[in-house]
Length: 303
Ligand code: CO
Ligand code: CO
Ligand code: CO
Image 1 (cartoon, rainbow, N blue to C red):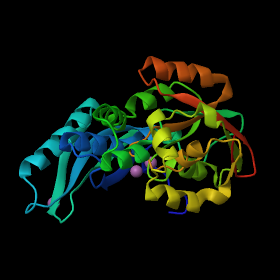
Image 2 (cartoon, rainbow, N blue to C red):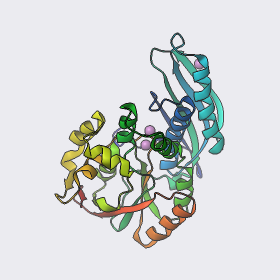
Image 3 (spheres, rainbow, N blue to C red):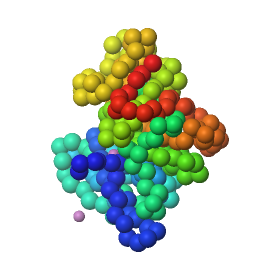
Image 4 (cartoon, helix red, strand yellow):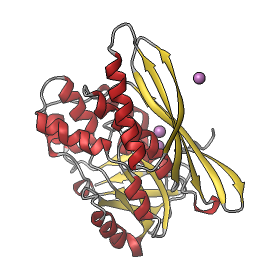
């Protein structure tokens, strides 16, 4: 627990280790099928973030049987199953309890070579940092709840949140990647801070190269910031130096809690462009080089 990572790893033999992780949460969208997809993509993500391949999963369900029709649950499970099929993961069981509040997620088991485990803190100076999904989903989800987002925008964001990090994981397997994590509730800054702390290295982030939903920038400018973003900022502010040149709304987006966000990949400078091309070729069109790993101190400079 001293050095928490995206998933637990247990070595079985010379060339095989198990990866185990568990994630579940309350609905972030109204459409139950989409919620199932997003929750499953999010649960599977931690395996990809370790460099592994998910193999089996089990459903975790909390459902308010008295207040909600069982068809809602069926749609959630169907969404989750479709993502497991896409990930080539076998659904081997699950457990459900009656609860006042609906929750869904997966416990996932995967495989990895023990020498190829990608932890967060192995970032090396001389590496570039790649982010594979756009930021701003927390802000846009807040706008959706407030009835301020168009149907088109909510479909666009659902599509991104439901996207598996599988293809990004497959792309990075071919390159000298030294560290990886996925961007979720702590926001980009929070997860980058986890990569930096204890690594001995620092980071420089170019705010202009961040992949961001432009609508999220507009909502942030209007002051539509989720409460979680303030918590994230308070928690990690001391590790960040945000230049006064950085657009205010962009600085807010650094702390925006993401749902089923992308991978942050630290790759040797000499291969960064090639990895980026490979990501784009796999259809991960939002992927960008967002900065670089520097020598210590363990701080993040945002320009
Ligand atoms: Co994670
Ligand atoms: Co997680
Ligand atoms: Co049981």
